[in-house]
Length: 258
DNA sequence: ATGACGTGCTGGGCACGA
Image (cartoon, rainbow, N blue to C red; front, top):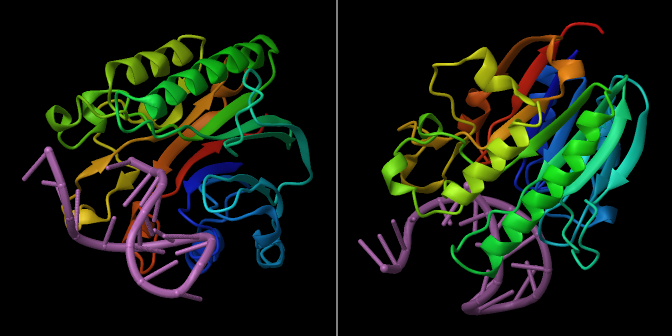
């Protein structure tokens, strides 16, 4: 079973790249972020042609998350995180697929810091941590995955000293990430590659991909009931080199049968 | 310190991203 997460940065502008990658990588389940499209503009038919069912929570212009499956039915369990009724951003969608509970998320960027956007990021993180505690306590096999907009450690940033004051590498954001991990989640990519420099995002500016000036901000976290099934994890970094590509690359895990 | 690039919305420049 192969499960992936991919921030597409506009699902319609990115559709040829997304379909090409799906055809090549053949993931069973995919979490998508940054659809940047309202619900009615989700390319359901094009994905169905490749054998993928989908659920999505779109939003005009910004945000938007989806879960794709070619491993059977998608049983939606939640959209949106609890705890802030006035939060209108489409950033969380959750479903049971093939015996695994999947939470797909797009955590707020939080820049500029300090400011209201950074405050929103930390509040959203707290709400995720509260919700994730319940997921762990359920004892179910759970994965939460997506664009966390946090580089957990210095190893995850091409030039850490330049990012210290940025919302993506700020002490408060990194501390929140580790509070989440401390509930018992396994960071699949870091666990399978403990000492490697691995990036999942490269800026469009300044030839960042060619210089490998990247960030590791897309994560797949596994609950204790799922982590012993982890076989491999990786980044399809070559996709970042394609024409009209996202600034993120797809990240995937391989699980043995449960 | 800023902007480089890219997307969406909309028909020109702005909001936003990381």
